[in-house]
Length: 154
Figure 1 (tube, one colour):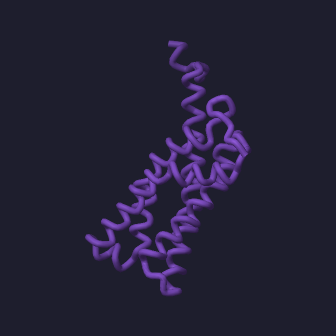
Figure 2 (cartoon, helix red, strand yellow):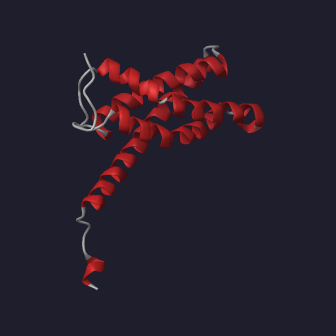
């Protein structure tokens, strides 16, 4: 009976709590990235770029925002070497998430009149579609804690 009220103390419990905290922070950062993404998309459309080129630009700026915030907050203990190369690696591994993100966006704009009229709906759905893959790949290949990944050459 006492075991039911014991606080988590095993290594597995500690890792799960750490993982949950990282995922929560990643999600908060994702919201900030979504705001940048959506704002740049709407600005791009207003400036005549259209929803397709505007979306490519908005994704790049949103992803750069999330890289910087994840580096500073979500994985603040990650290696600090080769920031330019880590940013490039972040964009590379997030191509999986981008494929889910942009694919969902494109599907919604071409098949759902509401999303075609309001492209931000497609941005939101695309962001959710890419989130889990981006989290796992970024955690493993870009922001791994010291000792879990080799430092990148500068």
